[in-house]
Image 1 (cartoon, rainbow, N blue to C red):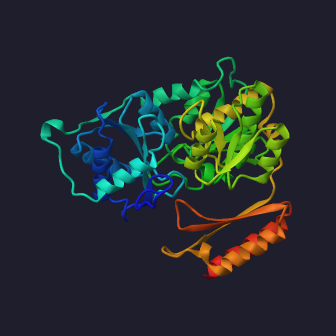
Image 2: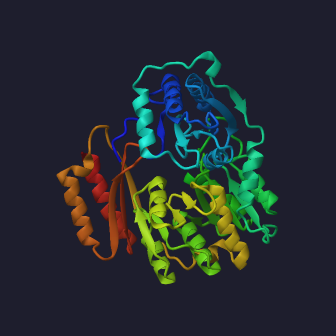
Image 3: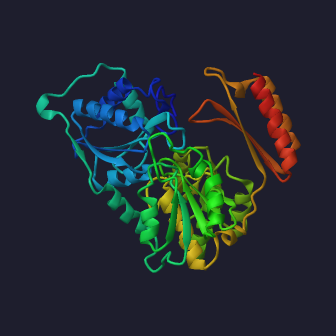
Length: 444
């Protein structure tokens, strides 16, 4: 992939008020995207957002830029990222845009684009948009300017779509589920999907105020959900992130169930039903325990680079349909075009109800190996991963754990962090190795 100036692995993201997440840049981005995307089709771009306070400012700027390029904006209000992918497809829109920084704190925001097919934009289209950003804004003649409208039934349409991915012969009417919406975009969607399928639903993290998105709740912080599941004697808990493309779960004992375990449950259930096409894609961060458990079931497993776009690429390359990151991005290409927390949760619930087993029991066929992840901040412009001291420490750790585990160093795609991951059978050993590498990165 050629070097991008603005687009990262997941659209454009940053702190609000600092370049590039400023009203003037987003206006320019809307215009540039409009110029590139203005095909001969609907001339409509669907714009959704999560619950961040900055969403109002950024959607106005985007709309003005698109209008200047001759495209109309159709607003959905707060909607999960995968819902925008779905609506873009069903409305045959030129593109879909989501204003969200996903699992980041509220003072970050970002812009993600979806193609007409509801997939992330190809690299060459992103490159074309970046090239347009460098030009001066022009304006189409007044008669060709874009308009703005609102899609009134967006939430209802998406709720029905999610429900349609759950087997019609099954019901959730015996389940008590706690759902944590991260004070984000699923707050008015996920509880309704589960209720309409028959579950007794208790919601937390469903009172967004513009500033509490992802704050001590949701898929990145399971503490509240774990306590509540145990206190309510619920069957399980579901945690979504701020924009609804990630899911984590909690079993009835309050134990966390991560993306690797969710992937294992879904893959095994499909194998049982005879509808697993090919194998399964994980990432470099996927736990070795997942790899071993899938091997026992005879399910092929491949690792992609970290980032859901790379999981998607590998799935398409192989012609497979099931993939996930351990952070909870689960992609099911026979259900939808992108990672979708609600739809992934429904597939796990299909296995729970269909097998009459608890979530805890469904996880029991897979043993997670201790995996220690240490994040180290680094200053912009430097590349600690190429430093001789870091390379020496990496080599030493790999030799020490050879044949019994894995060591991985990588840059985060969304923040200035080096992620140091060590995995193996002995928790003390892997913790020691991860910390010794992290110390050397910190010293630099």
